[in-house]
Amino acid sequence: MMGEAVLMYGIGAVKAGTSWLFNYLEGHPECAMPPYKELRYFYMLENDHFEGQIKKVRVLIADLKDSLETAPADRKPLIQKRLNKTRHWLKVLREQRDDPAAYAAFMMNEANGAKLTADITPEYSMMPVARLKQMAGVVANTRFVYLLRDPLDRLWSNIRMNAWRKTKDLKTMRALALAEVDRILDGKSSPAYERSDYAHGLSALETAVPEGRRKVMFYENLFTDDSIRELCAFLGLSNHKAALDKRIHQGVPIKLDAARRSGLQKLLAPQYHAVEKRFQTLPARWQDNMARV
Image (cartoon, rainbow, N blue to C red; front, top):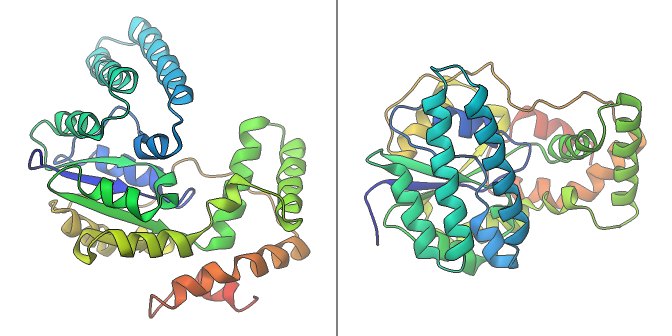
């Protein structure tokens, strides 16, 4: 086992506040974060899918080098620091990709005396029990945080985000998003829908990780002083003020018609029920959508 810092995994869900969480921890004086949010290491290890990520990291390095040349003098040290971290991570991916100990060493080096560092990768909620157990054991002190958002809201937000990445034209974006909903309702494969499986994520997490090292929180309740205080206590951090009104990557609002909404709610009913049986009280938004299932 290595180091004394906490290694926190943010395991999801997509479009449930994980970018906000990374931003918050990055600004916390007791945390030292990696160069970017989603390292995706164990997802790549599980699926033997490193090459695509290596290409993305190389692009990021090129972008950082360009930024370094044009940045104001007061910004250059921060950019250089991020560039150095990213180069180090690329070296791990190229030379030691199959060695979780190399990942752990990188993360503990990132901590550099801080209380906590974190890898916030929503795909980790899709990992099997064996992989989560491996993640829990790579360093002496790990924590898992799983953010849940109303299943229908999360899925529709995920679909809109994917459409936005393909086009910035609102009319085309809407058509792409609704076509994706129709694909899902027709039973065709959809990465956005696959990321809706709270039942698997919760079951695997509960099996793999001891209760005191995992925490599930609701997106709808996250942005309060009490929730942040509770999160910091779980992570072993001092309470630190959060920008509760700030939203990261907020989606473009597109209305979902009643028929498609109803169809998705029926598909997502097992996810509502999987969460309901574990928690005495669900946020109002969940209850409203469950009432329509």
